[in-house]
Length: 184
Image (cartoon, rainbow, N blue to C red; front, side, top):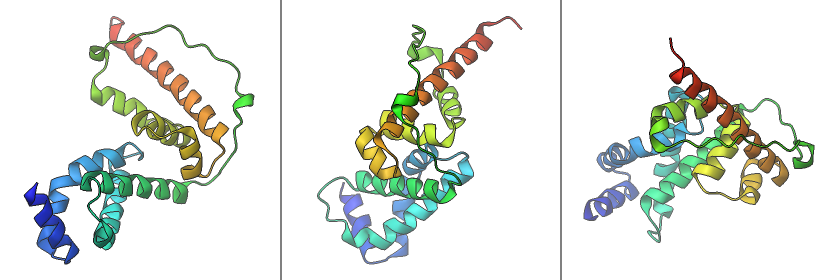
């Protein structure tokens, strides 16, 4: 813990060795955060690099009220969302009322059914809107109201994107499971 305080103090003074140590200590964790919002590892690395620039420029404002990691994680998520908005070519509005009721098959999987890598690869293939809402809601724990504000969409659009993302994910996981169990 004292090491973090020393690194933080050095970063606030603009010391490059402290900045390098902060990067080396937290880059893998923060890259994993960025990776959930990117279409490729290269895009995630770009987001992370931009996020670290913001961290270093604003670290003097970190008061220490909460966790340094949580503060940096929030910056990475906001950077990923900003990147998403920049890259987005077309915006559209979906209303939850336009979504037909869809019942999921009663399919249950255990923890051992899919590896972390398999799940991550399937989620990465999601369309951008689905992946952003799914990651913010299911992984980060944001509410649909908050997601709507962050992504500048209607709250119902967030709900419908999440519903579609779940359906999309379930369909892909069913296919993945079937391909693993079918004789070759």
